[in-house]
Amino acid sequence: MANKQSTAQTNQAESNSSGLEISNLKIWFDTPSGPLRAVDNVSLSVNKGEIVALVGESGSGKSVTSLAALKLINTPPGRFVSGSITLNGQNILAMTEQELESVRGTSAAMLFQNPRGSLDPSFTIQEAFQETLSRHQPGLSPKECREYIETGLRQVGFNDWERVAASYPHQLSGGMCQRVALAITFACNPDLLIADEPTTALDVGIQAKVLFLLRKLNIEHDLPILLITHDFGVVRAIAHRVVVMYAGHIQEEGPVDAVLCNPQHPYTRSLIKSVPDDVGNDDVLYQIPGTPPDLVNPPAGCRFADRCELAVKRCREELPELRALAEDRTARCHLIDLSENKV
Ligand code: ADP
Ligand code: MG
Image (cartoon, rainbow, N blue to C red; front, side, top):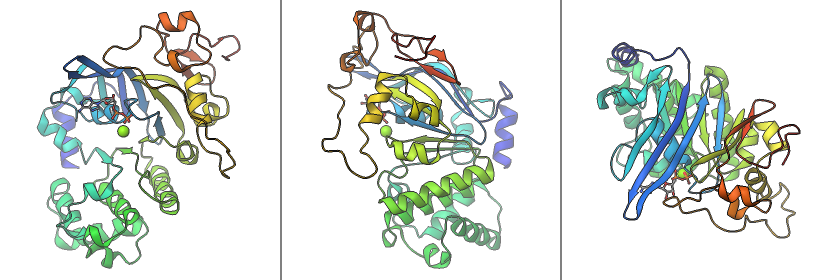
């Protein structure tokens, strides 16, 4: 808490908004053939109490966007080109490394795909917890520390919390490690959670448990969550809003039900079509033809045009704007008829 306050004091709030606000963000990677435009003019927000899913094929720029949100892409070959990022009104990009250190893990926490990777194999769970608590909540007595650990582990469903606390990561399954990582993340009482494919490496039963926990924490703490996933089942299960990203651009955004039931962008439709159905009835799984464009020399027009069966000349020549549609939605496609909201 003390850390949060001092950061807020040293870094005057730019706005009164709560949650995460990313505007016109550009992150490029310098390569021998030129800059690779990984994130190109991306704007998105995650408001208090909201779960926003960021979806798209591999290489779309989802992870780079989420890392950049906490200024974690700040060394070559990656570079911040332009844009702004605020968390609870505080300007993330204006913070010093020291201020950022206190934000990461306290105000904003990250959960990654591989939970074992984020847990030190030489620490027991109790030691890992204590290490995090000593950094983010200095001054806790051993008794208070133990209470935090018990509450944290119980919150993620470990009734046998003492056994789990005494274990090393290799003694726990992948799903248990992810729940532990979530508990440790939560001990810092974050204002924002960024979860990058948190359930991808887990089997289906455990996946459901972790998703349930994320939703529970979101509801109980009004916690904003930016959830990165390529799985529309996950989106449908817990997200409120979905942002569809392709080749560094946002292609479509809107409330989950509206986008999934009535996708507007041909890319969103192709993504949804390529999801196997729930009962495994698909004879041949649909695959989006072609491959994503080279982001060092991106096409002048729509970045999806080469793979889009509806593309016309204009799509290849002119970059479509992200336009507002009805129902709190936006999409980047020349072919959407605004009067009917249909391609
Ligand atoms: P996603 O998470 O959607 O799968 P990423 O955000 O990881 O995609 O990557 C977006 C783009 O940025 C990709 O083209 C990827 O190759 C590129 N990229 C990511 N990290 C680096 C890096 N360290 N150096 C060069 N290019 C990178
Ligand atoms: Mg990724």
